[in-house]
View 1 (cartoon, rainbow, N blue to C red):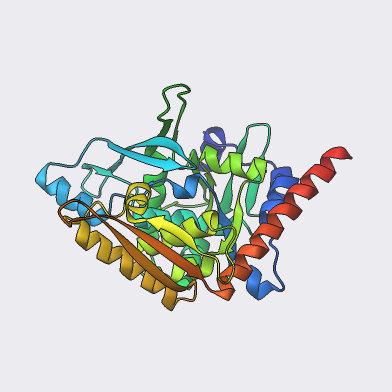
View 2: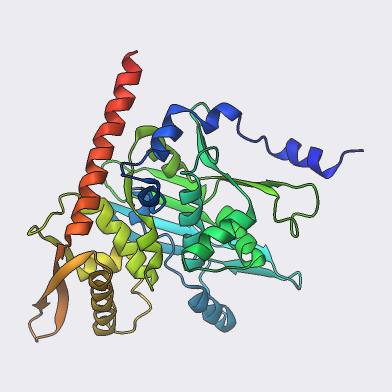
Length: 356
């Protein structure tokens, strides 16, 4: 007779031990900082993946639309990255609730927090893994560890809430297509390619069950090619809104030349299109006010010194767009310079090892 543990092993083969200490994962876990206290605050931002509108449907909006019978079967969201047009298509997860009724869930802010926390845990020794042959990357963890990480960052979640979010991430499908007439391409995958757990008892009750997540292929590709940037994860997680967290990562990725006196421009229309987080506002004026509050929060949290706004008016005096000019703090500038140096050091290390 096959026991539960043997069945789990038949379904999922855990990463081999070498994948937890290979060169790519060691570089992913090595930050440029002065001490362990600074290191504890750092994680990695993924340039393309973190700039896509992956979590734009809020749980509250989805519940309201579900009750009204208007929840879309797919989300189709146009966006842009480095001048390239993309279309992100998201298919919701279908999960049985406590009444054995199938409920559809789109990945939301809850799931984004789970992903960010797991990526942070993957930067810890013996927890993140990378296999070049597969290729695959991911993290080994316990629900207790994930709960403690979220709690430490001000986002307490129950065991049940975390398991639901993990299921949503494993069952939601995201298709990323280039919208280019000359060269079209696409990739389809669940947010987490694999979600598995091994327990000596009931997974629903065992806080020490060993869970494994395989990250999205874009994250695996980023780890393979060293295409990621260190940033202040602890500060990002402390922001009060999902949009502030998104914009913090966006600036960590894009504002690579940040220093005192240098400016960065971003349009309201860009944030609205690429975050997908301002569509819920009925009027652009309300969305603009919300974005202005986010910039103020980034000032209050020591990321920006100041920001200016230049309204672009239409023929009848209607605001068509707003150009925001932002100025970084010394602290943010120092963090960006450290990230730039770490990127250069990491790539040099990889090249030198390849020559040996």
